[in-house]
Image (tube, rainbow, N blue to C red):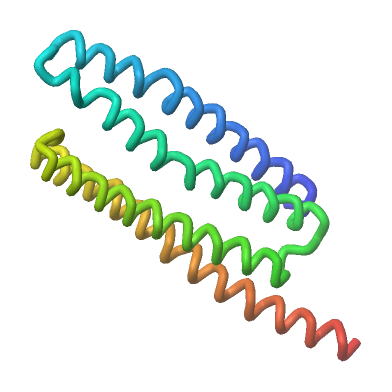
Length: 159
């Protein structure tokens, strides 16, 4: 696949993820929370803390999409193996790790404040595992892209 076509596909996927993410964060989660609040009015004091917690946990996810867009631009410009892409992947790694840590700590705090259930905390470990997996994968890709960029730069100087 040609670089321009690959870049366009990556951008299309990133736009799809952004639209789906906005739909989930702006409509699905609040609607589900309102439904739960009407079904269980004794838990209505938990609606806003949980909604704000989930919204704050989504901020790094959308920041990752921005860095993914930058990488897609570089791929379209035939600059796949650059230090800028390695730095973007490193930033994605840091964002994913910090979001996973925030999500874990937030779930524990909400449990300690008696605003959560131990089952919810256990289920959130899946999300934390996915965040850590993304962090590790992007850190490895950052390292590989950095090495490839150094090799490409060395090769450009020898020709």
